[in-house]
Image (cartoon, rainbow, N blue to C red; front, side, top):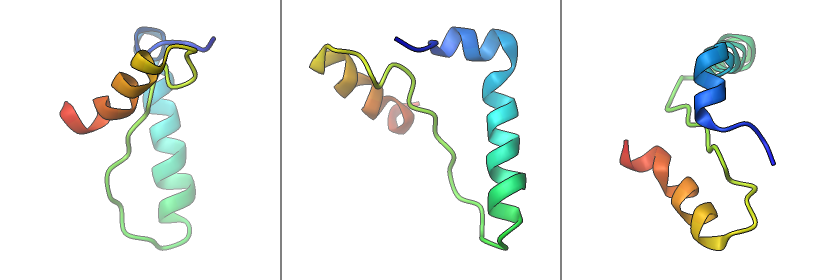
Length: 60
């Protein structure tokens, strides 16, 4: 299904996406920055895994 958090970390994808979102979108429109959270494994078939993934950004 998609790449997990380990893949994003190893290849620097998360930092690249964070930079694009925060600088390229939020700063460009003059908005105030808040929290940026990536929800890995949110497209899994298992409801248990989706629920765990959707709560993970708030528990770290």
